[in-house]
Amino acid sequence: MARFLRNRDGRSNSRLTTEMPGPGFADLARAVNGTLDAADRRERERAAEQRQFQRDLASLSHDIRTPLMGAKGYVSLAAEEPDDARRAHYLQAAEARLADMEGLLDALFAYARATDAASDLDRRPLVVLPVLADVLTGQFPAFEERGWEPAVDFPDESLVVEADSEALARMFENLVSNALRYGASAPSIVQRGRSLTFSNKVPDPAAIDVNRLFERFYRADVARAQGGAGLGLAVVASLATAQNIEVEASLEGDELFLTLVFPATS
Image (cartoon, rainbow, N blue to C red; front, side):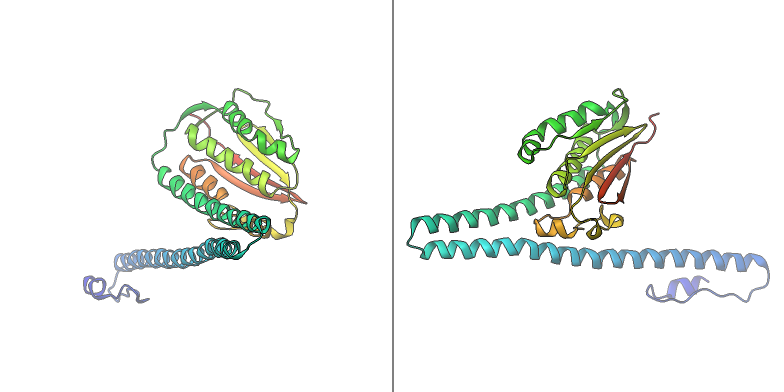
């Protein structure tokens, strides 16, 4: 057995067999093989995650290059344009492309900060409603621009959860921003028990895979068309996991529901 484990190639599918009499040796062989099976599964999962990460990076690289090349093209046109009005138009278009690229980079950095900070959160009891109210107040200009008013149904105004206040605010911010950017209606925020649900109508529910909404870099067609990075909800999921908060997504007709379920406080 020792020789088998010492000489076994880590990439091999070989398993330990024994012809020794007695159930003890067979049980030991099964235990060793079970450990090898688990290690192989972890390695396959790690390799699959690495391949997916490489694909995600390639996609993000393309999404960053696209507005950059567009900006360069408009700057070149502006440099050769004698008409002041058209030159100003080209420069404005270049500025818009650079703003798109800046948004993608900001989203990537926000995700990196969220995943780094997830292991060092200051979790303590806090009242949820004031955190949510601050986020909605900060988003007032965006709501006003769209002519929307969020509907908030929060019967337990004293609801206390154990969470990091900055991380919770960031989660709320991303959920509200997701509705503002991609939704077809003002968001509705409903508290029931220890759950908080953000919902809004979406323009194309068939294009949304709710099982992937919280994945890093996942974007439905509407997000891809608008230049989203697909990281806002991934930040929510990362911070939720770090605080033992469950996240759920579901579609009912053309309405998307994103729910946070907070654990009971000790």
